[in-house]
Length: 159
Image (cartoon, rainbow, N blue to C red; front, side):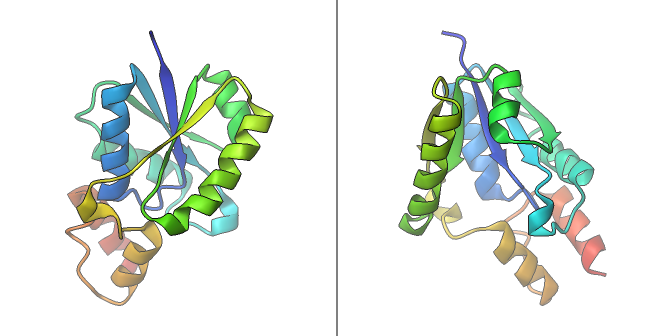
């Protein structure tokens, strides 16, 4: 079967945890679209275009991954992309309730598209973009949690 999956998120910035989920998905599906959401409600550190570029850089070595930005309803984006699966990452039990609610809503909006949950490698279960940004703002080391190009971009933003 030729299955296309979408892994949506704000990716502000993309972390090694996000990359791990994307790489796991790329082993399961023929094509994975990393859908970087504009999501201005979250007041992102990086503009959409830069988040897309950083995500492309972090995953450039995976041939069946495509990265693109979107600024509309995920249901509309997924339908236009002709995706059969939405991939969501679960780091901890605390993520489950929110993700379960999202999956239910997405199933209502797009009954033909399945949602699957993937968990990252153990060393990435506590990493979040929010934590990375907070550590960086306070001058802490983040090199263990992000791609080197992402580290450079965050360092420039924090100066």
